[in-house]
Amino acid sequence: MDTAYQSLLLVHGLCGLVALITFWIAAFAKKGAPLHLRTGKTYMIAMLCIVITAVPMAAIIANRGKPGIATFLAYLVVITLTAMWMGWRAVKRKRDQNAFRDTAYLAVALINLVASAVVFYIGMQMSQALLMGFSAVGTITGVQMLMRRARPMATARWWLKEHYSAMIGCGVATHIAFLAIGLDRVIRAVGIDPPGWYHLIAWFLPLSLSFVIGAWLNRKYMPKASTGAAVASRA
Image: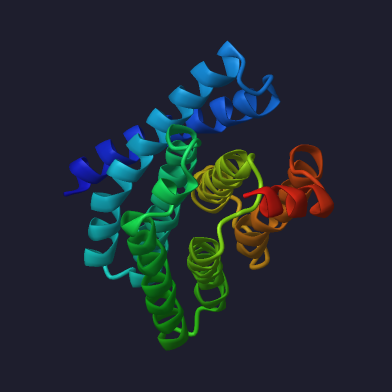
């Protein structure tokens, strides 16, 4: 079991490092340019590897009597897979918003709502404020998906917003995992015990920055309200 876990951890960590590097390369590359596309694909492959290795890792950790960490990993798998799926799908179905928001889209929205409720309940039972607070991510994601399914976005660039919003979500997951797990292990390996507030920053700083970056990208790429209204009226 220990050998299997260590092997999974090694692959997981290496893929995480690749994801962290390619995320920033893709972020700063010109959107739609070959570099952006290539590094974006590499990032998605690395993220898929992270998710695949995280599932058995969460099971092993739960078996070791650490349900809090196992719950965090399992929940991170759900919201990360959602962001990956949404980001990829937005590009593939950018010519048909109704096809993007189909039955599968509805199912993923409901899965996020159920997962967030479960995580909140477990966090409450364990008196883990971090789990309870972070459960809001799945709730917000699920509710927003349901709202957009009921009222699709009134702009031709809807797919672009869905794509970069999803990639921001992936970036949040990447950086939380790096700060809360990867960097935490490195700090402890050199004999330093991180203070109690460190994990609050590791979890919520990337999430807080995502709202700032999202607002900036919306301002840069999305039409103003008047333009959106004009598009809606023509539709």
